[in-house]
Length: 251
Image (cartoon, rainbow, N blue to C red; front, side, top):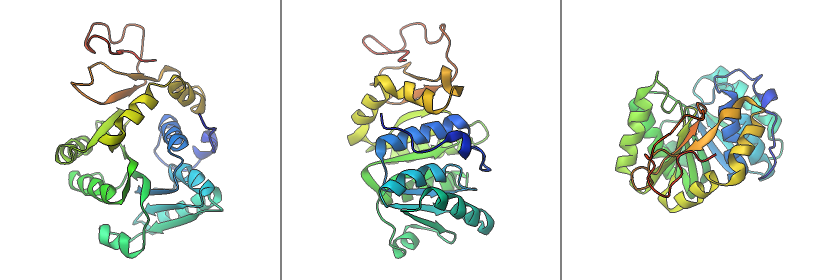
């Protein structure tokens, strides 16, 4: 696994709502994807944006943030530029749809992180926007997925997946949902099952995620999604819900 480019403890000093374990997951996805271009819808002060900016920097790419609040947009730009001296930071404030972004010559994206308005309609529209901008092998990351305060995010996501059957939710946990094209599902499932994925996630999270593991409690034919769980004990997932030949408790 590639080395991390960032210090999570340092980034946690930036005002925001992301947990350290969530940042560790974003860091690990970036290590694997090595993105050149990332779009983030909703930046706050850039706590997650600086992770994306750090990886974009090495590829001399662009971090695009959409943040309508002028104060937060300015703070995000300042924070991200510290981590991206060789790349480009673009913070858009008045973007309403795909055509607005294309007017500004937005490139194809390796990662789209959705953390904007939390209404059902907004999440659904953001997913449609992400699909239009994403490379075939790109990843969509949803924030506050399965978070009990925002059931509409989960509901909108499953509705969108029903209407876009060529995409799949390949993993979910720590209030993040990870979506890829079905053509790249095997790559991500193999990655999640690799020996060093959870080990690296634990290491880059500096101890907090000692209980993190990748889980399956259902066979692939039943549900393709892997769990990213922080609530693991030796008594979890007893029985044969996962079906013969599959892993109930992966790591």
